[in-house]
Image 1 (cartoon, rainbow, N blue to C red):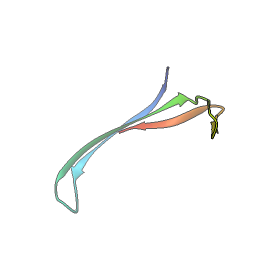
Image 2 (cartoon, one colour):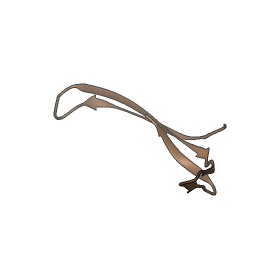
Image 3 (cartoon, rainbow, N blue to C red):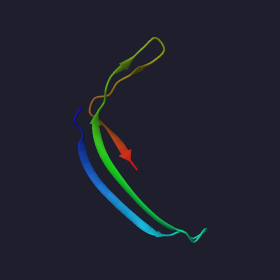
Image 4 (cartoon, rainbow, N blue to C red):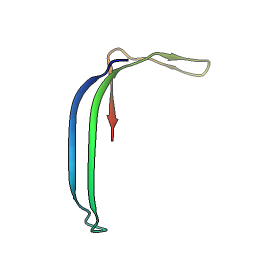
Length: 54
């Protein structure tokens, strides 16, 4: 499956509450919506679904 990459963010700093350092990255991408059908549910879409990878 191919996805369409949107953006990447990077955040680092020191927590206010615990005073510990943190370092986080997040990727946002779009993937085609896959139709799912079973006895109890049907899920479908027309365009893309936004996904986050943290």
